[in-house]
Amino acid sequence: MTKIRGKKVLVTGGANGIGRLLGERCLKEGAAHLVIWDINEQRLAETKKDFEQKGYQVSTYIVDVSKIEEIKTAASLTLSEVGKIDILFNNAGIVVGKFFHEHTHEEISKTIEVNVLGVMHVARAFLPDMLREKSGHIVNIASAAGLLANPRMSVYVGSKWAVLGWSESLRIEMEEEKTGVKVTTVTPSYIKTGMFEGVKPPLLAPLLEPEEIVDKIIDAVKEDEILVTAPWSVHLIPILRGLMPTRVFDWIIGKGLGIYESMASFVGRPKEEAVPEKKTSKIKLDD
Image (cartoon, rainbow, N blue to C red; front, side, top):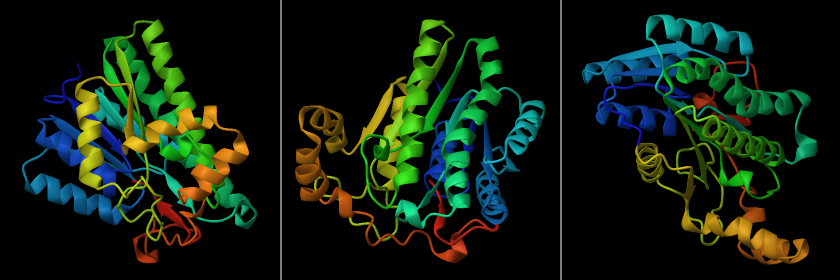
């Protein structure tokens, strides 16, 4: 069982959306120190001020998790200034809502760098101390997109498939080596945070309330659960995918339930809320 009270927690992409809610919830659960990594300097400062005014101990670092040197530098600073991280939430990510042929090469690379390599490198930076102490918990925010294909988000889907496979493999390694380090993988459907603004929720998979999924994640951490899946219908995807011929699955699940059309009206976050760096307005902060 993982205790949050008295622990040091790090959340990537923690200045907004689900990341911010996760950090705040951990503080309310009694976390001793919250570390927030985010690329958005303004939101980072606002979040730090808000939490500190409530009496919480918070440290913030401006980090682009697509850049390994920034990860290594920030990790070194975090470990020296705050100490060993007990619970790591790998939350940062981006999505591009386009058909694959409409992506630029830069958008493809950025999505993989943030969503896949960033997650792995952040975990790699903090795992050695967890192994030495024989304790720690890594929570990787994947997606239901890691369980099924979806047009207009092909690179995002590919990145989340990678995260899901890596995260589960890491969990098995930690268990086989009896390291004491726990790994939880989160695979939610669309969440009502603004990241997927404009999507049309499929039948049987309504937009998730942010507080609802945060409650599930925190409960899973405390209970050392392996997988967090929401809503309930996401549990059916691997079963139906395995039982149905591909064309039948496409027709009944993909088209019949509206999954394959869910991104047709995607808008994403307003441009003014996007990360202030040189990238297209179609790339939005994950949370």
